[in-house]
Image 1 (cartoon, rainbow, N blue to C red):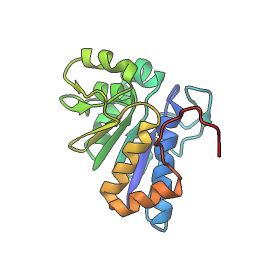
Image 2: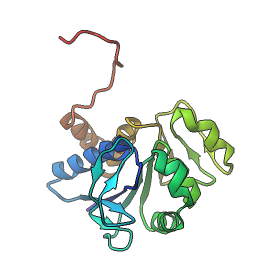
Image 3: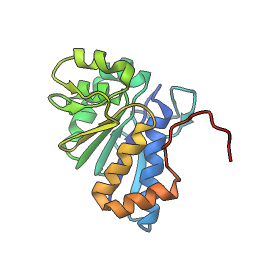
Image 4: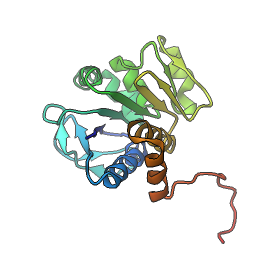
Length: 200
């Protein structure tokens, strides 16, 4: 059984966790419910995300089940607010040491840097924040890569790239054929890119 814990906070970027949530929960469904995914927040009430979506966490930092995968999304909250919140950064640092995998999307890498797991590692982040992250030091930002794997840390570029890295992760956990089945189920086929074509 694999338990995915997805951290949410004010001004988290929606697709940074909703995209991987879709991948993880479809993976669980295709494995006959053997796995689970939970939303975790500092407080039990609704969380308003970057574009206004409100979500209700399943657990707080103090009452969640043991996690196999820790997921950290990006957004303004990840790069401007939560890195200065010792309750969250301490929890990330502690939890990352107890999980098999840590998965960051977009500027979630800033929060992982502040908390410790991204320090001294090769990482990816949103293209518009690569220089800022590199300037923080003790990190190597890999550019022009949808996602980067360094040990048990997976980080990806912005928004939709989190789906790519989540698919890689379920493939690593449960096999490539399983990841392909998840991809087919969610009809994720991003090539060719948008070219303003007329629909068929």
